[in-house]
Image 1 (cartoon, helix red, strand yellow):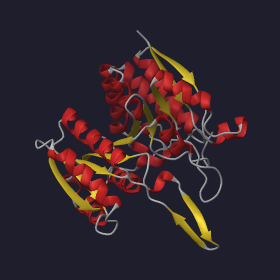
Image 2 (image 1 turned 135 degrees about the vertical axis):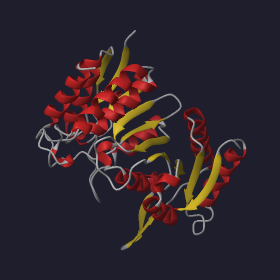
Image 3 (image 1 turned 30 degrees about the vertical axis):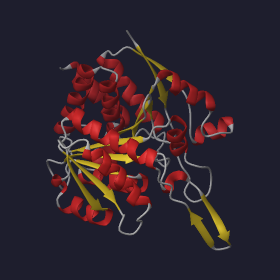
Length: 335
């Protein structure tokens, strides 16, 4: 039986890396009916909104989406389509596995941790206004419902995947009520799962410890802003965001996407690295029950990276996006 999945190409390099992932999945033989929908800057230009309602309906219908990066302007301009998407579909959990990739040189070896980030509130609620000229106020929203929900997700994930420890990252020494509530909810959930080691760490200390001793961490649990920042830091431990997958998950819907940006300066030039989105598609395949195909793709990609003969320029090579994708497809054929 085939799968019906939403495909969101995105902006900039998005269409190129999503095409690469689709080609690889097609080669491995998984029967997928891809239904395309556009969000982001391209959708805003064509349809007057960065998040068309029919695309939201499409993802609600399929329950699963593979998404390329979308452009978000800095400072002014329109609100992030990513943030709007997560709120509209209640994709409350950002899940980012951070693990060394064969053939990719980094400062550390043996890194294997999970970043779990609350996705729907905190400072990313986007509630801000100018009080008087030159004075802007942003509201950080933390609720018991969302904090307990993401804590339950983290502990459930840890138990399901055999993880042993969860570190809740916070700044409750300063933000005693908001981060204090987040910790209170995490402690309540932790008390129900004594089989999982639970600890708490102030965010600035966590940053230092991650750089010094990343191997001491297993699962990191945190609210929105800290999770956004630390997930990038953790990606840097293993070679950068180009080689790390990600997903945004709710109770019924999961969107798998590259964690890097849309890189509009190189969009359409066929030089983007497809590794991150291919690995995100591996996560997606496991989510829909296609574990064998997921393993084959991961093995083929790692084989190409390990050999080092075909790499995009960000990885020190000269290959185009197409050439790297072709190499993965060839490696699949050699299995």
